[in-house]
Length: 140
Image (tube, rainbow, N blue to C red; front, side, top):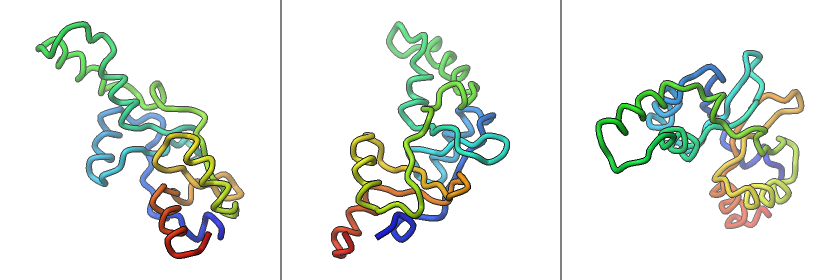
């Protein structure tokens, strides 16, 4: 079974110029924990996740929750995803055997991997549950 047969094709991405707040809005709206980050030519250059945004918000936190902490968090959320994304992204290829991608997915610690076409464009996301479903259906 190939990755393209199990992946989800409705992919939400953000441009590398998006703010962390914009990325968080998309994650919240679509209930996602990670978003592919694209360059101006719509090519994948990294991923931004909840953990990256939390890390940005924690910079400068040296006291319990206070007005200063909240003010610093607002400033952090105005930051650019390109400054906080994980790059390069761990990916899967559309025509790759799902078993090979699954090994990389589990080793990465991520919940999902961006899937790339032969031209290097993001065409889907392969999640852990996609792999589990393929196993449950006897397709692996």
